[in-house]
Image (cartoon, rainbow, N blue to C red; front, side, top):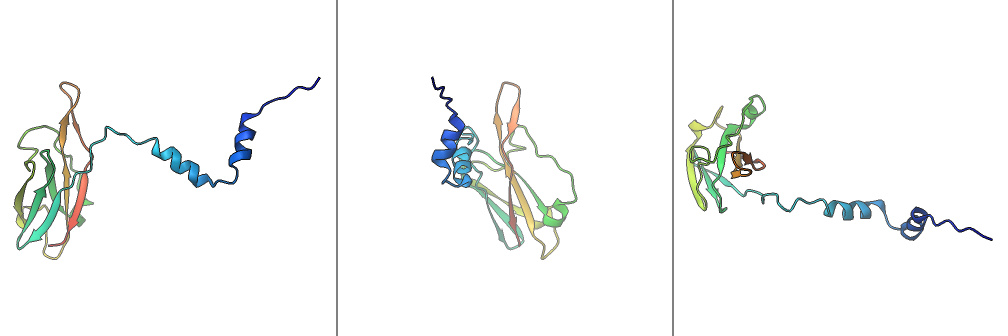
Length: 139
């Protein structure tokens, strides 16, 4: 009497040995996408004379923080996380103009980083920030 042992791993190895490992990693990474993640914030930033124009094309209010690029690496700051107009200063489908003198650490000829985010209600009494985007502009 013969006994057959089925080794499923060797079966899989045999059938798919010709496919590169990268193919399997690509398939596996597609299944890990968090579908409830907020879409990327698309704050549009442009320099105009002695100011920056920030335009919010999204349907949610956005918060922002503008800082000179070199200063950004030396400071410790925390984004606001309250759903108030004092934090979320750019209305949906609208824009604001900020003077370069209001940009922390700004010096002529230096780049500015404009961070943007939104605050969304989560569990009652808990506010969660979305991811934070950064846009670099040189006035």
